[in-house]
Amino acid sequence: MTNSLNTIAYRAGLLGRFEGYVDNAKIVLSRWSKLHSEVKTIALGVELSELLLSARLLGLVTAVEVLLNDVLFDVFVSYPFKLGNRQISIQDLNSSGSFLPSFKRISSVVVNDLSYRSFKDYLEEWQKFVSPLQSIKEEQVKSFIEIKATRDLYVHSNGKLNDIYTRKAGEKARRPNSKGKIPLDESYIHYASGLAEDIIISIEREILSKYAHCTKEAVFREMWNATCCGERLNFDVQWEITNKPYYKKDISWPWSSSEKALFDFFLKVFHGSSTEITTDIEYSLYRWSADTAEGKVIRSWLDNPFYI
Image (cartoon, rainbow, N blue to C red; front, side, top):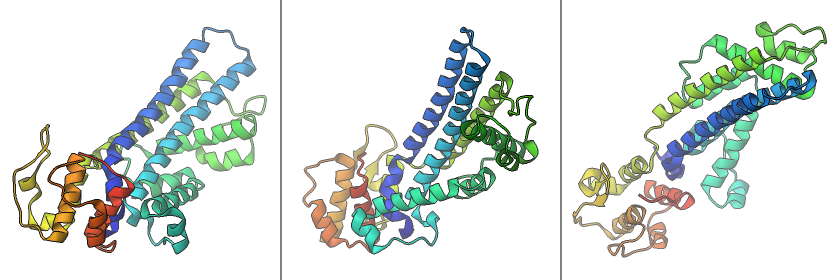
């Protein structure tokens, strides 16, 4: 439990960020589709038509890759124990100033390292760390691998067949046309766009379901329950966050001085400001060291403050 408390406040916005990542990916696909429809009214030569199709292919593949990477990064930061045995050095902490920037730096490195693996291996690791994509079949993964290989071919080799494409595409590798290029036409782009959309929708379905609890209200409850305040007083006895407007219930509890400092912290998260707050964050940090669950919760919020 304590292993995930250092960035618990970061999880308060996780669901919202995921929704934003998915929306962005969908927008990218939609814009390319609209552009393609608009340009169809113009008579383009073969070379310009091929250029447009290759650009669209690049855009839709990148949209999927960015979505996968952004989600994976946020999961690592939110649940740093998923980073395994990677350690934060004193130098890391000195340069970062706190845990959250350090976890972000390490997560960025890990995601970047994983992105250099084959897409098949990358996706397998992604599903271990994030969530299984149950609606995506193996054949679809193989097809997307070939699409990525075609994208790379047009970026680096103007579509000319080479050994790298053949190796990456595997059994889905396609034959070149009379010009030695891997074919790129409207039917292929239509299929690639549809597959990219299927993958995005599958990602959306899984992450918005599995991480539905990563909201401000749910994380506030989790933070309370992780501390001595939760041990002393049931969350629902003190707080109403089921229906808006939320409110603090009129309950008086004989908090000790350390507990009152922590309770004032929760009041600040809940209200922003309140006449009931009699201590400040500095005092709560003094009373609760960084090696306690309470100290981790407070410091996580300072790194990523939110309010109910």
